[in-house]
Image (cartoon, rainbow, N blue to C red; front, side):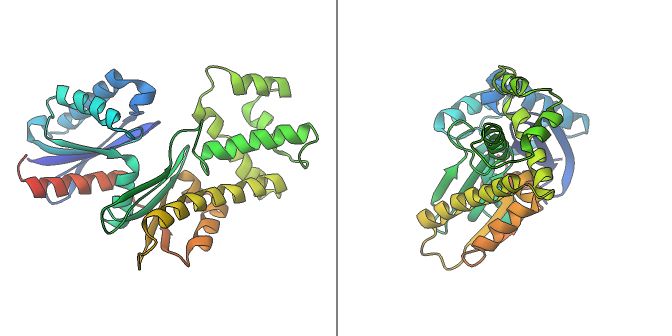
Length: 307
C-alpha cells in the first residue's frame, strides 16, 4: 500500500503519522526529541530510521513510502536544511521529502492551508505568517538566550527574577520564591542559585516552573498575575509584528494559537484573543500540528505524482 508520512519534530518529542492517498491515518509513532541542535545530526538520522522501522512493523513498508513532510524545530536556516537533508539522503529518501520549520505545519493544521498566522507558545515561542502573496514573515523563535518572549521559559525566568528581587526588597512581596523552593524540593535561596546555574539544569527544567506561577496567580499573588499578563502581551507583540509587516493591507486575517501556554492557561489565551479579536479572526486550535505535515505530504504527492 502506498503511503505518506508527516512528522512533527520538537525539542522534547517527535510525532509521526502515516496516511494513505486519501488521508486516512494508518499508524502513529511517537519518539523523543529530534531537534538536531539538541541531539546532534547522527542521533537525528537514527531517530528517523527507527521511526521508519516502527512503521514497517505495522505493515507499512519503506518501499511503499511515497513522500515525507517534516516540520522540525530548529530548522531556521539554509544550513539546517542542508544538514538534515544529507541525513535523509543517507536513508535513501532523496527526492521524497520536504523540510520546514514546525511553525509551518502548525499553520496548515490550524487553518487548512499555508496562509495566515500561527503563534506557538510552549517551552519556547514563535509567530509565523504567510500572506496571500506567499510572502513569509517570522517573529521570535530564536531560542531562550535572545528570544522566546511569552513562552513557558519566559514565565519561569520572570518568576525567578521577580521572586529574587522581592527577597532583596526590590519587588513587591510574592509567594513565588517559597513556592519555587517547595516545588523544586530545595531548602534555601543558595540552593536555588546553585540549581539555576548548574551545568546540567536544562531549559525544560526551568520552564516547568510555569506551574508554580499559574498556581500562585490562582491564589491571588499579584506578581504571578502580572507575569501572566505580561506573557500574553509578549505573544500579542509577536503577532502584531507579523500583521504589520505582512498583512497591513489584508481584508481578512486568520490567526491560530498553539502550544501549552496558550492552550492550558486561560488568563494568557483570553487576553491574547481579547486584544486581537478586532484585528483578526483569532482562535485557539485543537488540531495536532503533525496533521499539517500529513496535509503537506499529500499535497506534494498529488502535485508530483508517484515520486
